[in-house]
Image (cartoon, rainbow, N blue to C red; front, side, top):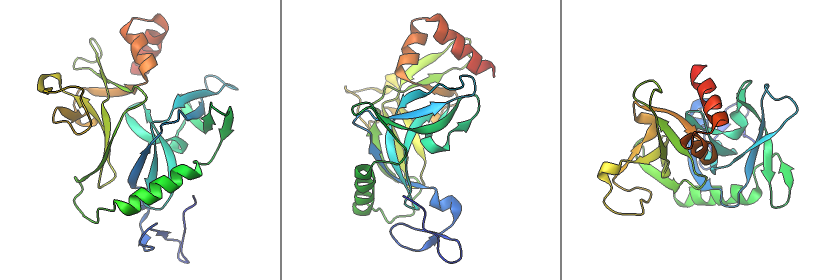
Length: 229
């Protein structure tokens, strides 16, 4: 979905049809979990001519009406099309493995889901800390924590992702000392935001996280290269 400028070049709010500034227009207002296994395709300069894929966590609707896939990337959750890091990756499109089909625009059914839900659940409140949504992590994301500059590390599974009224999205981790009931579900009192913890460093896909846990030499070498850059 394209942005809709007015005659003066302003970006128009999807619902109010009023102009919004550029920073405000980028604010995420609704998430839709990706439940069909769609993936993001990306390339990097270290492997010319080769494409890689990553599971999409969810789709996000911005205040200006644009939609994109969201993926955990290094130390934050980012829109797929924003990837433009020569070493780590460039966005190349999306991939549907069920139909063996690559595509370049968000699926229409996800756009419809996001727009309808955003209209129905419109909070109409200014509190930046109001929790708009919290969705479970369904792609096995792990957060890597270290308190001694990677001499020792902890890999913690991300339980959920929390969207706030100001567009922030936090990865929520469980504090094992505060767990009272299981399974741990979104909005549990034991959860804390990874990005606000002083020991948090990066996010890893569960396959890489498990290889690191089991001492896989290739995974350890790639991880070592990452932390030395």
